Amino acid sequence: MGIILLVEDTSEQRDLIAMYLGMNGYHVEVANDGIEGLAQARKLKPDLILLDLGMPKMDGYQMIQELRADDALKDIPIVIISAWTASTHRERARAAGADVFITKPFELTHILKTVQKYVLPG
Image (tube, rainbow, N blue to C red; front, side, top):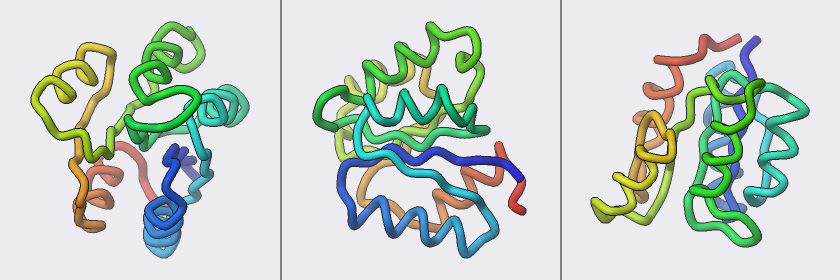
């Protein structure tokens, strides 16, 4: 079974996404910020990371840079889910190494379809 790491500081969104993906057969681990997310990524070696950009302690951009600099984690697909929707945010996220950018508010089905492109449920 593939592991998805969801790094999101807003508990309502984190719980909603984790529950929805769980109901669709995915194993989801969560982290509240970039520092916790990076530690979880190093521990779990997830198959996919869903990542918010605007978080305390370490933002999503910094976390992407840390992931891409780590040989054990550099190839993990990263899907950004963010309310920071300006083209500069998208460009900066892609330049740092993000694979996909989903804007908030989001459709849960869109997140699921994106996840399905990278990780099989179950």
